[in-house]
Length: 60
Image (cartoon, rainbow, N blue to C red; front, side, top):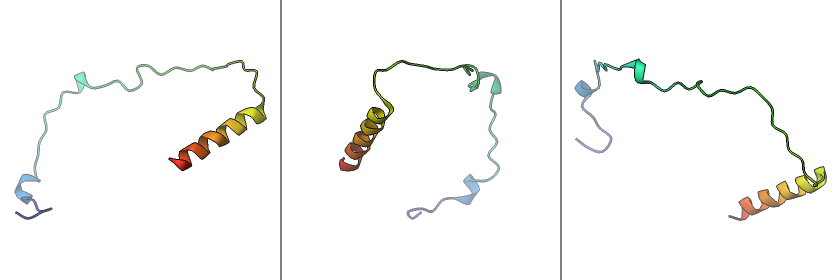
């Protein structure tokens, strides 16, 4: 078998016996609500900080 080739007989009729009772409950910890915070920074201060952070990412 060369690189990237496969035995097609291994690829068909694969039955998996999966037990769904042990699966992950993805919505188990969903929360509805809000988040708030207080800061002394102005909107322009925060926008400037965001710009600085984006510039740092571009340099990396």
